[in-house]
Structures are given as C-alpha cells and as structure tokens.
Image 1 (cartoon, rainbow, N blue to C red):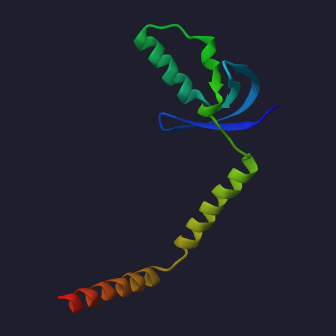
Image 2: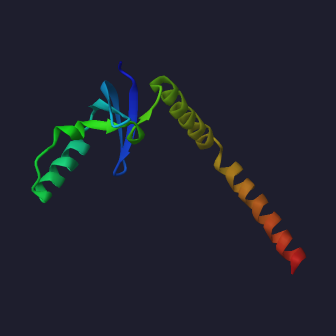
Image 3: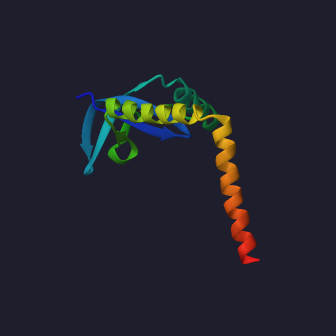
Length: 116
C-alpha cells in the first residue's frame, strides 16, 4: 500500500506513508506512519496535558481530505529546481544587480518626470 502523504499541521510540514485504509460513513480514512514526527507528538502531548484529556486511538486515522498524496521523487525534483534557481541567482554578480537596479530606477524617474 505505502502511498506517500504530507500534511501541514500548525505550520509544520509532516511526511508519512499510508499503512492502512478504511471507509466509514462514505469517507476514506488512512492510518499513516509519520516520519520524524517528534514535534507533532510533543504538540499533541502538550494539548492533552493542558486539556486533561486521554489520547484517543481514533486520532490515528486521517480523513482523505486532511492529507495530500504526492510522489516523493517528483517533489524532490521540484525542490531541487528551487535550489538550482537559488544557486543561479546567487551567482549573479553584485555589479550586475546594481546595474539592473539603476536601470529600473532610471526608468521610474523618467516616467515620473514625463508625468509631472
């Protein structure tokens, strides 16, 4: 089964793999084996302590609209595109950046001068 999913919880990006699924009341639910999820687990433990509640094993099931399926290889490839783009930007010389910003400022100044 092992389909990969992600979820954003409280600003945290969580990744996991589906290990079970069930249908209940017309909804598909998944039990997920989350990876490196200590921050989430600490958050849940803190909420339980503050609310004086017990953990409910039903919380291990996630409704299909609460998780996002993805292909890890495709996501890694797209993330690498961001990295490559960042590296390209960082290799542009400081002089080129200054020259480009001066060109933009000259155009803005010329437009303001012609409208004033």
